[in-house]
Each structure stands twice: as structure tokens, then as C-alpha cells.
Image (cartoon, rainbow, N blue to C red; front, side):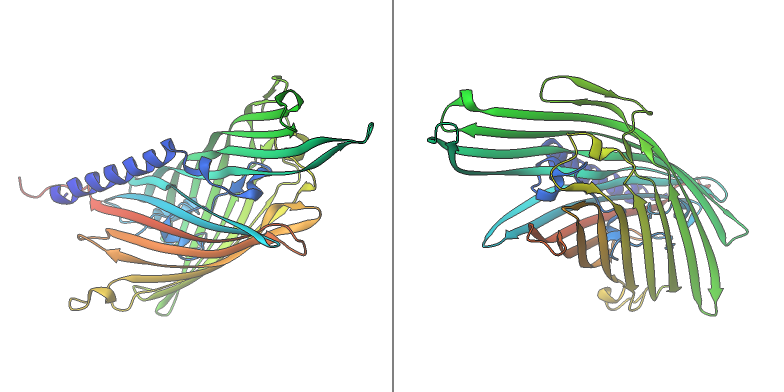
Length: 426
């Protein structure tokens, strides 16, 4: 192993991790403003690394020995058998909210992922890491003149306000192995954990005695299993890869504290869970030149029990089946070109469309957008820096609810080095 590469790798990851931890300490996903996150467990975070996100989030049918791909546990086998691989990313989100003639702007900065992969034995490999799962962050208020109907007197303005913060993370570890050179299988154990706090207040006039504040605090934790499979089929100079994933529902433990201070202790049989998921994907690749990929995932939240708890439900809130459709593309002009650096870079683009896991007043909440990005090779081997952005829009179809437009930026670092190699000379 190259000592210089190792020292640079450790220094880079250390600096970036410190930046990510600082972001979390300052609030991270907990401080972002997103009105729709008032419902359920908040906004579900796009899965994968900067590599996945710059291609619209595809990964179920994608194999690449240069990048870690946590979307399909079987993809961990697409790696050099002697390599130690790390991946770290940060993201920054800028959102514009409009409704009628009013609007607002908000931005956040946070950790995207931190993971490492290493070989265990021959075709058996492992991966461990942490990523955000959901984000809750809202803060708004409104008021109007109040009238006591009993005596027909003006009692002053009635002010309503709502705020919330928190987030859930997923810590995971997985193994993957390859059979018959083309078939790969993998599995992950995922541990969800985090805290969500929501506060709702009503004040009449200027008297604090006439005010009411309801606070819900939720501490959640629970585990799920995820399995994946991939099969590669050469077609002339091309390679077709098909993949599938299945994730079990995650029964939640922890507690929910209601406004009266009463604590509802959750158990695995308590009826509160995160939905399971099925997914399928495929990709067509020409080695070191281009790749196109498509993913579909579905998760049924209707039996999760979120709509039975005041801490997660709301007026017009109904659980639904969530569907994701993602299309991604990457292109390398001329890998190994010694004259023009930009021809060694990898360029990516993607499209995505998501129907959210709930409806509002019977209206589906959807997100659609595009992604763009590139990976800049650095040092030697497969080390690189990935930069990307996503442009999208989120709103409730056929309604006058808030429209959310956003542009997200991602910075990812993937580190690669040969660690498990016998020295020929001392």
C-alpha cells in the first residue's frame, strides 16, 4: 500500500468527517425548513452516495468497481478483491416555497453518507456505513382577528404557530458474494434511530394565559433486513446487468411523549413501523465508455400505523403507496487520456419521479427533477471527487398547496487503495 495515498486518504476523510459532524452538531437535517415534513416521519432522504445521486439515484442494477453502491447490497461485490474503499459526501440544499402570492427561501447543509468497504475472503466482501433516512424541519405561523361568539366581543388576534425539528438516520452493515462469476447476492442489516419533536401553539390576544402549546416528542429505533441480487450478461462488447432488492418492514421501538406528558412506549408489536420495499433495476454498459440504467422501487406505507398517532398524523393526512422511477446515464470521453484531463472525467445525468408515502386531502404529493454531475479523478487508482446538483419540484397534484422548488448540491469523495497485498520486497 502506498503510504502517501493512505495518509492523504485519512487526512481527507478526517477533514470531511469533521465538517459533517459539525453540520450535525449545528442541526443538520434538523434545522432545514420543509413544510411537507410536518407529516409522518418527515421527508425521506434520497438513498445512495454522490455517485448514485448524480445519476438520478439509480443503483439496483448498477455495478462499478470504482465506486461504492449501497442501493443494492449485492453491488458490494463489484470491487477489486484487494482494495480498501471509502466514500464520504456532504450536501447543501436550497429551497424556494410558493403559495398564491407569497413565498420564502431556505437552505441547509449536512452529511450525505459515510461508508467503507473491504474484502473478507475471495469473492466475499463487506460494507458498513451511515446515511440520513428522514428529515423533519418546519416553522411557520399565521394570525387573524378573533371574536367570542358567546358575547360578540373582539378578543384580539388569534395566532397559530407550528415548528418541528429532528431526523432519523440509518446505520447499516452488509455482506455480498459472487457465484459462477455472473451472479451476485448480498444482504444488509439496517438500524434506524433518531428523534423528532413537533410543537403546535395557539395564543389569543396578548395574554399568555389564553395560550395553548402542544408538544410531541418521538424517540424511534428499529431494524430491518435488505436483500439484493444482481446478474451480469455479456452482449457482444456490452454488458447487461439486472438486479432486484427486497427490504423488510421495520417495527419501531422507543416512545412517543404527548402534550400531557404521558409516554406511549413502543414495542415491536406496537403497530408502528416503517414500510418494507421492493425494487428492480437494470443497466447496459460499455466498459469505460458509457452506461444507462433504470430503477423502480415501491413501498406500501398504508399499514405502518403512522396515521394512528397524533405525533405523525394531521388534517387531510392519509398514508399511501410510494413509487420511485429513476433513470441515469454516465459517459467517459477517453479514460486514460494523458493530454486532456477533462477526457478522463466521468459525466453523469439523471431523471427521477416520486409519488410520496402519503396524500393530502386526497391529493398525491409528487417530486420530479433532474440531476447532473461529474467525477474528477485524483491521485492514482480510482480515487475521485464527485460534484453534482439536483433540480426539482415538489407539490400536491391538483391542489393549491405549497409548491417547493429546490436545487441541491452534492460533494462526494471516494477513496481507493490496495491494502491486502503481500510485499515482494522488504
